[in-house]
Image 1: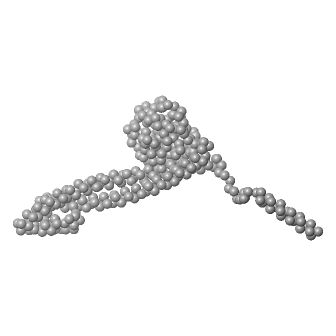
Image 2 (image 1 turned 90 degrees about the horizontal axis):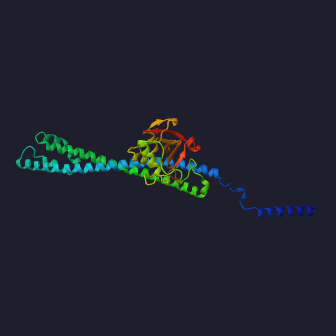
Image 3 (image 1 turned 45 degrees about the vertical axis):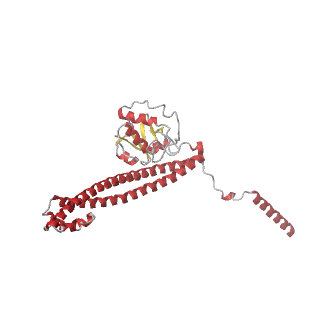
Length: 335
């Protein structure tokens, strides 16, 4: 009897072992593949993140460019003031030589003008104050230029430091965006045609989307804006792009510039630079804003707008009734 039990137990163990051999290793721990809807949701989230990072990058870049412009202006002014300093120093030196030869009370001027830099002159200000009482305006001018030069050189040094900081901030943001863009591209490649259209379900290009150019009722500057915008339909998106490829705010800025209207570079600033318009009162040429001021487009009429959407997409027309854009709509602005 015990032998029968032992035989049945052995047979049971063999069957279990055989089943284990047939089952693929790790089946119980395999993670479910990402569904299409989950992948599309992730792509939409990445698009939104890229929009926000694009704004930060463009803001940092504009600050960097402004700091660079200020530094160049300061350096130019310092160069001019240093030349004035040198010219006045020659004239004051001539006065000093004359005073020394005549043995006048101004014989201490040589010591003053022997200074090689503005700060050394300023350190002897009290002596200058004394001799300035008895000499021509050259001494006063000399002192004033020394003060101005010393101040501007200090400002230029600070501006150079600010420029380096702003440049570094812009580059850091650029790297952050590039990382996000790489994620987007990898996801788009993985999903292929099934990716649909990313943020707002729209991935171009769609040659017929713009209908061969703007033929709407807009007039004046608004028409100029829209004619140019339609001419760029199908142009691939580029983060930080100001042309010939564009990001969303680079596209709107350039479109308005075509009509002689200057607007800021980044989406939040474009929003603040425009007057609020209700959705019911939108006019062709107005700006429409989305996603917590992460995205912007140009209203074309009929509930539609033209924009440069996101990485992997193109300049195209979309509808305000699109579920994503409708749910992420912030408002509109007119100049």
